[in-house]
Image 1 (cartoon, one colour):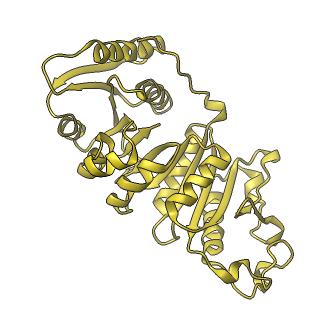
Image 2: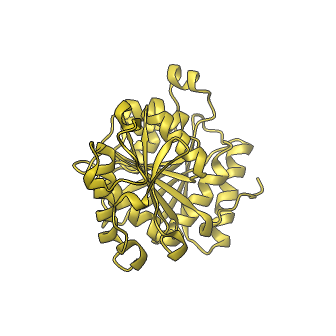
Length: 305
């Protein structure tokens, strides 16, 4: 298998989904840290229930000071909190530090509300408010802005994640299950003959390069025979890491793929695996490797699409 996929780090765009100041602190913090490490632009989105009065004539998003609004949308309060947190995460960002959360920076456009931050002055953060069903709105935001990676907190319901977010979001997805920022994880990169393997290898190499985490490449077959596709993918992965002077360990194991992934990962790996190519109906009926793996482990998982 010849490697052809490339990631351009300078153009990466990450999206972090938050729900409230009470529960989303760790997710926002890790999303900010990850974006900073990769020098990626960062979108922070809150998706709330539709509120009819939010679109009414009593609220003018571009002219009234927030303190004088007849109502305060809970999502705007959460974004106001997020801006305060982001300033603490990026104290060196003078442009971000000078921004105040007021009506001069809040705009309604493309079916959403956006807090406009001074990108032209070096600030690469956006705050977004959307209303409606969570997965649908996240999908629309990713499609609108072309995000490469969606960062999701691990506290959300796993069934909802597995059967909705993983299936329908068009970007790669990082699920921060019990992620500990000071812990030095190992990367467990799952390699097979699937279409997403090339991209998984690229993400694995980029993470290893940026964070210095050890890499273990794992190929699992249900039988004792590792076919041409599996062997070719494993060889391709090794060649790519060798070209970047990144040392790896490599294993070929016979057994049930998901059970092997979970057992091998233990509690000290971050799993990187390709998204399923099954259609959503088949994934719902029969499951997929990412869905089953997510349900059975609490380590962080990057699902590459």
